[in-house]
Image (cartoon, rainbow, N blue to C red; front, side, top):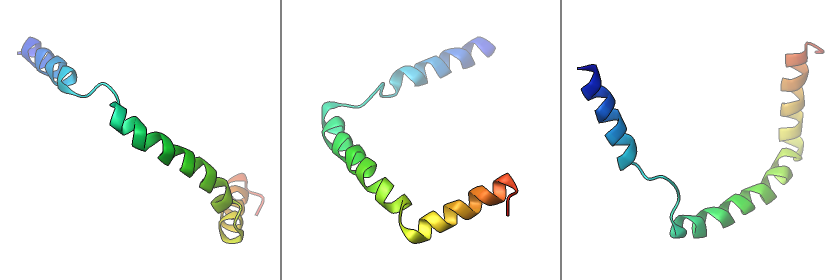
Length: 63
């Protein structure tokens, strides 16, 4: 019984995609670059910066 479960799990892993295809790279790479460019601007905005500072200070017990 245990051996059949192990074999079934092994087959399921082999059936999965192992990685991205060329088309996925063509879409995923620019999306990741755009996210990397936009994220610092969002984090540095006043509202988000204040919220993050509050969370960090609360976690450190300073506030």
